[in-house]
Image (tube, rainbow, N blue to C red; front, side, top):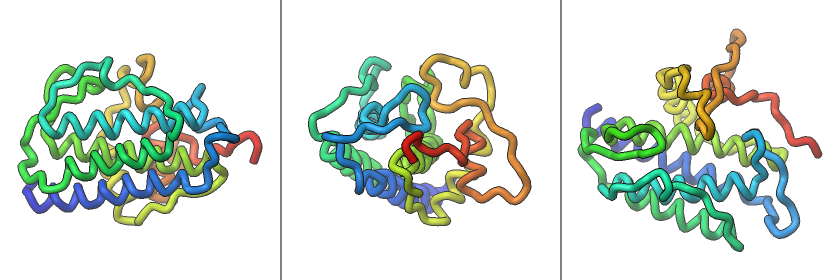
Length: 203
């Protein structure tokens, strides 16, 4: 990926991060902790996971070597406030990066560093899917720009649907069947094992 392509992807990623934060707009964590499309997770669990992911990616693209234990989520008293700070942290870390071949170590993915261009793609997909997770948990739809979703779909099509998805704690379940005429967002979700028809039990 050329430098200008990387910078474009980073801008798309920034908007995906913003959408993931905006999805929490109506949540009142002190009184509501709904279920999510992530099996076994309440929304409080999901935001804790999303927070450590943003912090972990920020550390990784800065060249810091982390261990899997560093990515363990923790619930906070002000979950959305802490998540907002984590979003600012990762957006700042990504801004100005220009070499797509820069090695980035993501211990949750594997023991070998990945090129920065690949890491940005993974981060983009993660934020698009989690924006949907959060919005659906609250009975809404995420506010995602079309070009952001299209970029996520392109990356999702290349994510292997292998035995890695069977492992405990895997980021994604196996692909779901793709009907004809599916939207870009729904295709992205189904490629990553999410059912676009999911809705909260209380809805």
